[in-house]
Length: 295
Image 1 (tube, rainbow, N blue to C red):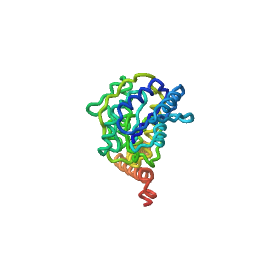
Image 2: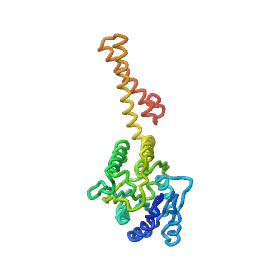
Image 3: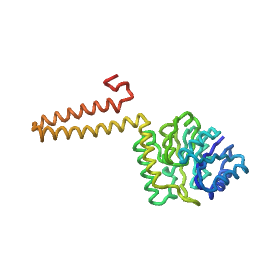
Image 4: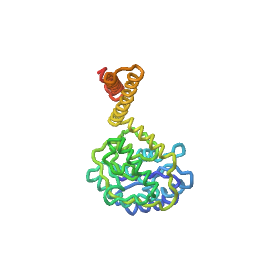
């Protein structure tokens, strides 16, 4: 069965239409799991939908909010072996759900409708939102090794096999849960299929100043949780610190101690190498028992 997880926050104008569109598009057994954080009458509308349609389930949360945590809660509630995630604002076309299912049946572990593969488009975003989206994607691909092959890692529309996240400790913050799945999940094959991101039909965007800040915190946490990425960036930072040590020691020896320039240069380089070695031993390679010195 396909479980379609839909986080909602004040989407009263859209949830009925989205449910109708999913019913028209999906031709296999499915369920829709709404995880709702609304403070308007969206919960009442979802309750009525659940009474009318056996495929609809929902939970209304009052003690926790956030798109990422809503998706994780949806994973726990879902009963299907295929888990799709989409927004409630009608910008993600339900017509693609069966294409996503077919890609999974053909062997994909993660299927991402992408705005940035041939045939895709992000035309539903204005110029400022496109800039924000591009910056977020580039940061994720720069910082995280497992994200680099994916063209649209910040998408909120994707499908995974349950096994990809089963037993994984997910600690989402903010609204870009797919990046955490790509970093922590168990998968071999990611497939991106083209789609056109539509303009919001009703309701208001939930994007504010808090979300970009939470995104940066999330990226930092993911780098810290990924040994490969953590080692790479620690190695870069240690290398940069070596440059600082080199110049500082050189300046001190030449300007204050009046050493000859060749001697001061050699001593400064030696100090920088020793500093880099010790810092890499204790930080970059700390997973090794006691570092290289203590191995």
